[in-house]
Image (cartoon, rainbow, N blue to C red; front, side, top):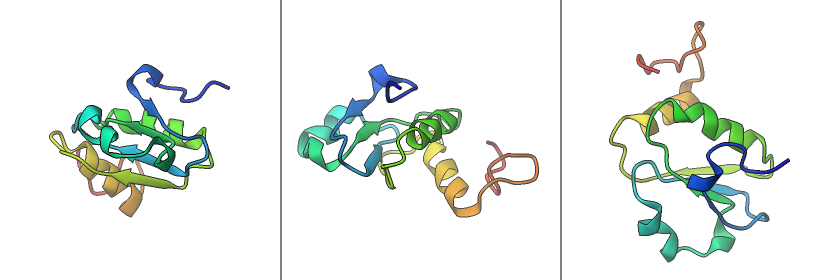
Length: 103
């Protein structure tokens, strides 16, 4: 299977041996990645909206060696807060992010 599955042209691949993925929210990749060694991360990309959370999770689940997701950058649309809420509180009875109110 080719990985990443979704939005591959928009993502930066690092080392297949790394267990870290970087979610840079709205911060441009070119402002962050030149300061890092590609050996330190498997994948880096942006998360512009809550709709992207599903695709982010699918890409992560397709690479089970990734055990850490580093969430950083400017959160202009609340996508980072929604992702954090998902990991903190999970889903509600309707399958929406618990406590988010909008996702």
